Image (cartoon, rainbow, N blue to C red; front, side, top):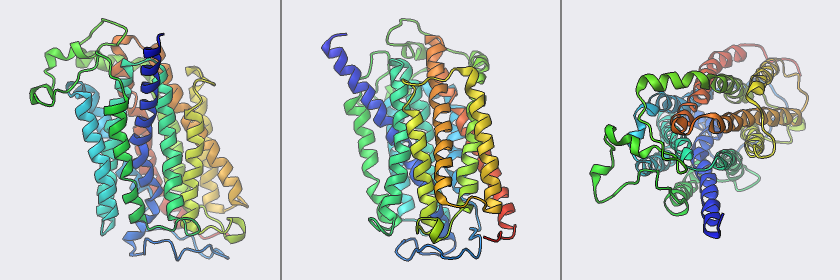
Length: 421
């Protein structure tokens, strides 16, 4: 590899890291802000200056609506996009898709920042979901035109979105740190779509196999179906393919060994994050003097730390497909543990919950990165773009199931008497 090739390779690996980071950033911010969004429904102030820890816990402090409602607004549009887009999205050039993703994410920050009630906030969450869903299926498909290493940098970037997004929101809104309002914090986040645009249009070096947009000729913005084949070829292969719908459906079957374990891991993962941990909190002496809402935000930070570590680890530790179901089993056991703790409050200190949440994040991140790394390694070049795109349905489907399950479980736990502590 010559010097120029090395420079291009570094630029592309870096670009995919930033694409992963920016694509998931709004999604993470909305989940971190879930309790603040729901507080608007109760007419509570969204500034955190009056938050204090509780010396004695006297009630469960349940919200009228579970944070699972925010999760559903954050994922259902994503699932719809992922279920349908692989069958028509190849007609739209990547540049046009990228513009839509950046626009949707910027709109999400603005709408939630200036919302006057919870439903307007949820509309902003929907925009974040549209951007993240379209983005993931777009950039995973785009990765098929590059070396397999972009999968690891993309995954690391998405993990980085988790830790940096959750940490940024928690840190900027934390009373003892920046102490900014959620509104100001969300407006600061508008720098992310700017970085997003630059990563694609400035940093990334696009191979000739990727269809480019001619801005002066709008006719090129939608690619005729008969010419699709000329645009979905790998940079190292001259093979082209125009997949019929029946063929695409048949290609999904061998992917199920990857998709089913990934979906199950995400069911357990998001059932914990948006259905249970909001119901687990500690008093001052056992919760490091953190207020209840602060504890929730830091749960998100700790979880995303685990995700970031494991999503960045595929070049060091690789898990074979045969072991992926084991990750789903372990995540299921995690969910059972958190469910009973939400009812009985038997965990004595927040530090233990932090450790378990890191473990939960490690399982989720490992399942994600090893799933897509395995697909990139094993699927034939001419089917790789479609396969990488359609496999993203698995995690979205798992999150949707978790969102629906979390709401009745939230009500069930809230109806239970508070255990004696």
